[in-house]
Length: 318
Ligand SMILES: [Ca+2]
Image (cartoon, rainbow, N blue to C red):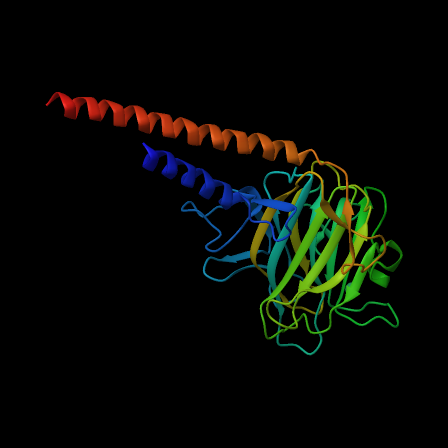
């Protein structure tokens, strides 16, 4: 009986542990399978259940999804099939920008937009978009005094135009220079973390392995539309480069009640954090989930106990 009860509790604890993987003590995460993409990328029917691609995109099942090859006038995209509806989320992407040429371009974009797979002039995707675009711009069209490659975020309202001629300077929300992100010696990664109405943070990994560089962090970012697709696109013109997506890992984030951390106001203020007293809606979900787990454990214990009793009765009879 006790053995069964203990093993049921242990099972419950393991199930709990599998989802309770937050790095921050107050933030829990669940992997979002619908927005995660790993090798070999494709199913047996040579399509992906959760992602769709088009244009010049090439999939090499053992290596990468190449949005643009190192050839002129390439234009490819990769987009999730279902919208990302989580309120708070984290997306970590391994990517690779590389090529043999001395002069190269133009870069790639990450999207959280209402539009999906709409080819156009903004790193291969549609202009006047609605939602968030993060641009990894490797070619300086005209932004004096700024070191390229330059990574910048833009919130589109569906009307505002991204201006390629000055690398989107007037519509920049936040950004950073990332010299060395192209042809890097280590796997290059980005991590975008979004807490609705609270914070948007972009971290990059390209200098040292397992060391994140803060690109920007802001509080009270504009709302990302509730129905947005997660996607990527790249474009080459006269100049070219390979723009590869290696893997995408998405997580749904929950803050637990009482003491969720949030960044202090201002750009780039990642180091100092303050306590947020607001209870989040997520905490209730977790509380109910815990109750279900305990109920399962107790139920398991009872079933085990009944079986044990029946067994004891049988063995007494004979
Ligand atoms: Ca540019």
